[in-house]
Image (cartoon, rainbow, N blue to C red; front, side):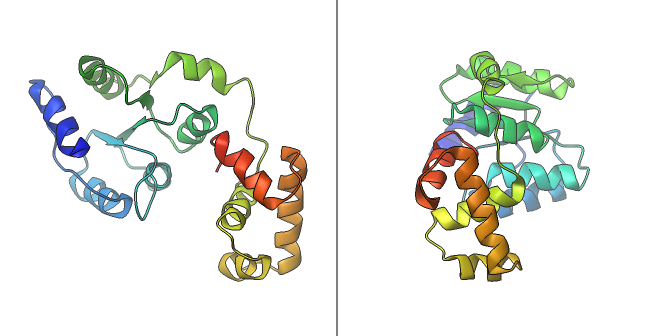
Length: 189
């Protein structure tokens, strides 16, 4: 319902055309690669691949499509990750439809569009985790044992324990579960 409503709102604008809609990140990536739209508007959380994962993959492939994240996650950690993944815009879903259309136009013209309050907050507390610590902590937070994480990421179990120990220490947590909760709350996972 939200997907259809958002597409309808944007298509009311005479200069914006919605060329595709996708219900999961893998389909969205395929659609962007096949259709090569100017703008890819996505949420962070989607089945199969997150919007951040799709943005990072588009950046890796040097796709010309610009990415705008439209989300409910008003967390500085997500904003920083979105920018690192190559997003040109990061907006909150509670914005007015006409402001979203204007943001699409601004990004199309080569500018960045970021929620201003969130932008200021993003630089107050930087994400202390490395990409590998984040991967390991995400899996640990999902309940995976160190041995299973090691197998999934092709690491030794000792290396996994070291990454978890570093993440726990950096976040000032008592254990892996608390570290994952803290990182998720701050938008770092």
